[in-house]
Image 1 (cartoon, rainbow, N blue to C red):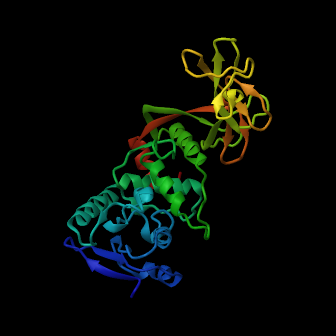
Image 2: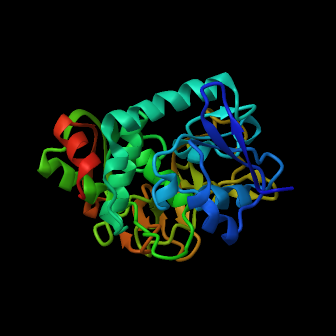
Image 3: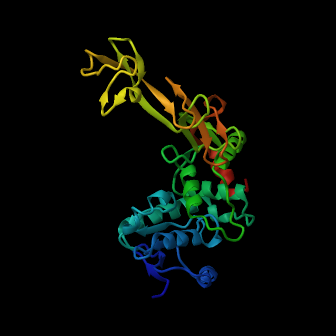
Length: 330
C-alpha cells in the first residue's frame, strides 16, 4: 500500500491522505506534492507510529506543513486526545463535509492574516513559539494560559504541550521545557502582544529549577522518612492509660499494657481519642507528621514554605500582537 494518496473534496481542495508510515524518502518529496489539507487515515497503525507521523508533518517545523488544516480518522480520537490541539478535527473520511467546512475556515484565516507572506528559516525556541501562536490565530484561538498543566492549559499552551508529546529528537528541532511557556509569556506581555483577562489559579514551583511537577508527602518529624504507619490511640478508662492500639493487642484481643485487663466494649471500657503516626524507619511516634515536597524534575527536597508561588492567568493576544507575530520574528 502506498504511504499516501491525494483526494479532492467538494470545495476543490486537494487532500494529502496519509495511510501508512512515512519514511525519509517521502519527506523529501513533500515540496513537490500539491495539497491544501492533511488527513491521517491511520487507524490500523499502532499509536507510536502515528505519533511519529504527526511529528514528521509538524505544523511548526516543516515549511510545507505550516498552518495547513490537519485532520485524523475518527477511530484514533481516544488515543490522541492528549495531542488533539495539533489536530483540527476527527472525521470518518477525508472528504467528510465537516472536514471541508472546517478546512475552509482555517484557509480563510491564513489568507486573512497573510501568514504565508513571512517565513523565518531560523527555527530556535522563540521562532517555534511564534509559529505556535500563528497556528492558534489561524484556528481563531486568541486566548491561552501560561501553564501546560493538563487541567489548566488552553490555546497556545495546549498546542505547546501537544508538540512536546510528539516531538522527534532529530535535526535542529528545538526541545523547549515547560518553563519556557512562562518565559515567553513574560516577553509577550512586556511587548504589549498579550494582556491578562482573568486570574485562573495560583500554583507553586520548585525554587531550584522552576518546575511545577511536585510530589507532596507526609514525613517523620525526626528523620523525614515518609515510611509512616497510622494507628489509633486507645484510652483505657479504668487505669487512665493511653497508648497506641498495637500496644494493646494481645492474642487477638485488646488488653491494657498497664493493668493487663481485657477491654471489651468501646465507650464503656475505652475510647479512641486520636490517631498517631509511627515512623517505621526510626520508631518515632508523632501526633502530627510534617509535609515535604520533592521536585519530580531535579529531585530537590523542599519544605512547603520554600516553594515559589506563581499565578496562572488567561491571556488574550492584542491586535498588535497578532499583526506583529504574523509578519515578524519574535
